[in-house]
Image (cartoon, rainbow, N blue to C red; front, side, top):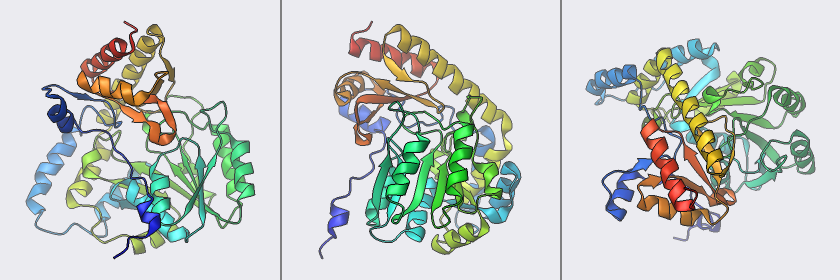
Length: 368
């Protein structure tokens, strides 16, 4: 059987290199992975207890209605449960939104250097990608985005905005969010998706979530993840918050058991642990400030970040630097697949991990 050309031509999303693989390849006993924007604390103690309790019921299918999880999330985000649904990570939600709202040869629009999952999903659905230029290379440009949309108005069905953005760590400020939504809420046949996977890490005083605008914007979807601040990347739990008609359409597409019983139990516990969220924020912000000080000292250019990572410019082939760092037991993330061949993304870890990463970078780049 012949595999369709549009599938053969896909470039698969490449995740961060696993610790175990690095240990095997380089004969290392200690490896620090700062490549995938994971929470270095792991899941909260309340999540771990919930998982231990839920283990006994894993011979049963999970609740397909996600009732208790929806109830907890509605309280946590202060929205109605009918405006929420969950997926096997936000990747699944993104995939289904494209399948629901796009047909072959339609288009999706997103800023340059945006999360690669949008592109991978589009390609699998024969949907074309349109990229809006950024301002000063890294920052969202509202005018250019609107101009790009106007040129392709007939074919664009979804506009994706990651705020804060991965891999740059930059963000759309509150004034721009409002202006953006003022324009796009009038485009009734276009879905607007704000991917807020990193919003809990933001410190910028002029950052604003799109969530409050759901009341006035019928074509808006807000995505949240449990992989980052909650330390649940391995459990695969993502959420969409949207109008009830969009949620109902999504629920018709998703499989009834797409979110495991373990993930549902863990998600409920995670949202109840406010102290853990605060602790993660404090460790992240302290780690970022340490990176900024050390990168400045080493004269390594970086982009100030509103995520739990920082994008650095190594001024040379980043894949070669990546390989040299692997030999020292440090896993960072090359982002050539985003069109940034001289950059590495470095996640915030524990102090010992952060210090080891800076030391290795200094040695490899000859800045020591």
